[in-house]
Length: 358
Image (cartoon, rainbow, N blue to C red):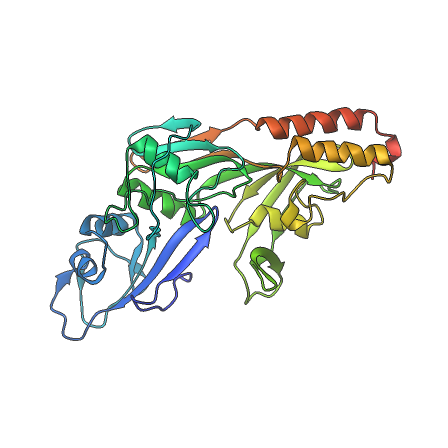
């Protein structure tokens, strides 16, 4: 399992990928004098704030390795065994205040909840965003009140995230078993995730793939960039397909093979086609088009119609964590992106032929 670092239990590596999920990576080395004991009991005794039930769920989901082999709960640990495992991260130390915020629920059963998040909503509380988040809304909807020092970790139910200003579908786990099994699918890249984006420029190819590592920008810790250094960043693959062309902008579908923070935004900017309205990666300025004042006013109007990056998490598919059946959900484009497309369709109808071929 190459993603897991050689870390002691008190040295936890937290890996946060916006779509892939959030995981803690652990390494335990069994003492020489350890008597034979089931691995679920051993792990529960050596992990603070983690119940034996959650450890058993992790073992059942295939998160736990001894050496290079997946083990189950009845494995008997032996002296010098090296236990490596991954657990979906449970954010601690942040009070989750229930707030009556409307949720657009696409699907719900006893194990999972599919929410269509609007643009502008932060997923979880953090610096500068301590309320009004999706987790605050879920706390109210699910009837959970969680103080910062609560031992009740039921609000560690997110298995992936999308940006504040990206709209679309998110999967929520309603219990430990569902969270661990869904998070494993994100970790294994077996989830189907398709986005639609409006990007600057007329993309030359009808379809293609970007396979470029993504790393934090050393000059701006809130941004990311591509790197061709295989020793830097994280492996990231985005497949794209042109859906509609408008001359100066293009509607594309992006399918994520991996899920890295800002992946689609960074990869499209790398291609020279930043997402329309994406201020962080150069999409909130005129990148293509004429020099005429009338066109500049048209673009300003477009930015007002859709005042954020034009990116929507449209399709989400996964194996149901309880019954193993494939579930797939699709969401309509939100009103701001629909209105933006309508403006470009109308504009492109009157665009001179030589401009349409740019």
